[in-house]
Amino acid sequence: MNIPVEYFLVLSTLLFFIGVFGFIVRKNLIGILMSIELVLNAVNINFVVFNRFLYPDKLEGFIYGLFVIIVAAAETAVAIAIIINVYRNMKNIDVNSIKELKN
Amino acid sequence: MDIIKEFYSGFSIMNQEVSLVLVLVFVLLADLFCGEKGKKYLQLLAIAAFALNVVYGFTLKVDSTYQDSFAGMYVTSDMHILVKNILNVGTLLVFFFAHYWNEHENRSQSGEFYFLMLSTLLGMYLMISSGNFLLFYIGLETASIPMAAMVAFNKKAHESAEAAAKYILTAAFSSGVMLFGISLIYGTYGTLYYNEAANAFLAEPLQIMAMIFFMAGMGFKISLVPFHLWTADTYQGAPTPVTAYLSVMSKGAAVFSFLYILITVFRNYAETWQNILWWIIVVTITVGNLFAIRQKNLKRFLAFSSISQAGYILLGVIAGTPQGMAATVFYIFIYLFTNLAAFGIISNIENQTGKVGMDDYNGLYSTNPKLAVIMMLAMFSLGGIPFFAGFFSKFFIFLAATQKEMYLLVFIALLNTIISLFYYLLVVKAMFIKESTNPIKPIKSDAMSVIGLAICTIGMIVLGFISPIYEYMSSISFGI
Image (cartoon, rainbow over all chains, first blue to last red; front, side):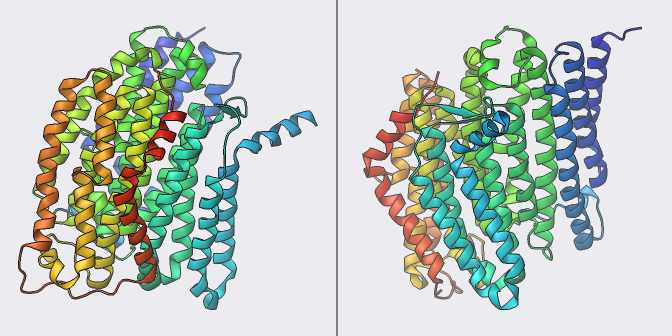
């Protein structure tokens, strides 16, 4: 049985906007980071699905998905290090604790 | 064997990247093996090695108008080389200004500072020269991940940690949004190569949506309104040399690659993206200006000023013509000297006294006349007062937009220039007219800062009058 391509695209779009919503409303820095991962996963689904269904004779989409995963890992590593640094300085990783910069 | 030979021949036009990688590896190894005694010379060594790279960059030329390698993954032309050279000069100036800070507050990590900054520069090179969205994405991330580490460089300072958290989260989110656009581009165009995508024009709503997602992601990087919210906090909290780098180099590289993608991939949607950019420019310039007026911290003040300057740079992008590209690159070139002069003075004063408030600058002229005069020149040039270089760059950028008959847009931008003069002159007023009971004590600048400030001052005064520069830029520019 074949799942039509639209189903995948609806899933990835939903996932993308759940990620955007999470990025805006989450109050915890780690939570925000997780929301960003959701956005990147939506992108990966898109790439793989387009490649599989529309251009099956090329590999561009798969390769791109692979690169997105790798770069996201690097980005998360740096982000976690920075969040740990925030925790050391403020004893807290709540978004409301990082609002000292203003005049 | 032929495949291997072909692979290596691909590197033959990547001279600038290869030489930068050599400098990068050299700095890394020198930092590793120099030991405690050698640390003294490490900075000079790194600056000298990079200066050689800068000089080498100016000797390069491309045989034909346009060259590519790795099957179109990497493209280069005289314009690409010129933009990279401009970024090189800016990075060298930042190194000059960062020398004192590295020497006194950052002694043990100065090698890392140079290594990370050169890595971001490499990312920007790849971003500028990309002919494929994959290389573009990798370049973008190579530029922004080490940048986040540099914003967080003052590990003990609250502000630095806060600024870095805001920077890395918005950078990651914006590249997520941009990637969503790129995935839709891949789905609808069927290719990731710029020149192939330009021919796969369908006039489908989904392609326009892909373009809008892409533009939103780039808007974060260039800090356009409504995507500018991270800018002020990050600029204020980051170490001052890093702020200077962020405000000029990362913006310049992003603007040029944005322009290149708009005029190649989205060539057929020119009318659509011009309409979108029209509104973005109006809002960016106005909001940047209005918020800059009430800032009391100079770094934060320059952050908002750089937001409105980004709006002016986009006036060249919106034209999309060869004149527009020449004007954009010329604007970046002048903006580099001007903004770095302002940041050089701020970092000089902050290093020695720790003061960055606007009120701290009251009566600066009586104690430090030279610094005050250079700061005044920078403010005049940023505001576009004739006949400083900033006037000429604004003139060319308005000319490029006028040639596309965007009279209303140019008129709004001109009105905003008047507002911007008001707040730039606030700084001049503080330095020259206001009295202070506790002015900044006379400062003896270190040799490196003096060299950097001298170069910036000469650039601000002289560059506008050397017409061959603009003529060369317009002879190698291209557009729709």
